[in-house]
Image (cartoon, rainbow, N blue to C red; front, side, top):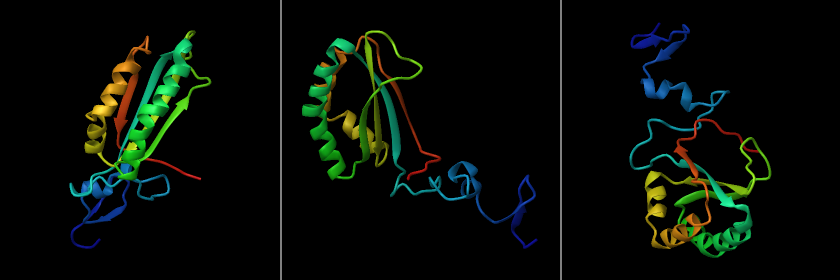
Length: 154
């Protein structure tokens, strides 16, 4: 074994890589890199956010119209400036948490980084929209965000 090389618990030889470079969570099933845990602060990793919005069914058309006229221009701005890499709103047709009188929506955002997420959340246009949209939500949203560790695209 070359000097400076180490063996992993599985007995494989690793040539002087740091634990961050060897992090199996940063590689796909076939070893391809998905996220770079050692990425510099100059190029932070994208952040994925998933939110389940729970809108009163009777007000879903109002919500969709409001979303299209108020939030879509913000998305246009953020995607044009590459602050958002992906943005979509999905009307839920079924699933394990379907409730009578509630229309669920899945909001999916891939922001350039956490700062872009915070920039959106601090945007005055968004906060005006949010104040009105919250009145249409009889149940609070479910919110998650984090770093993508695996993905596939067709």
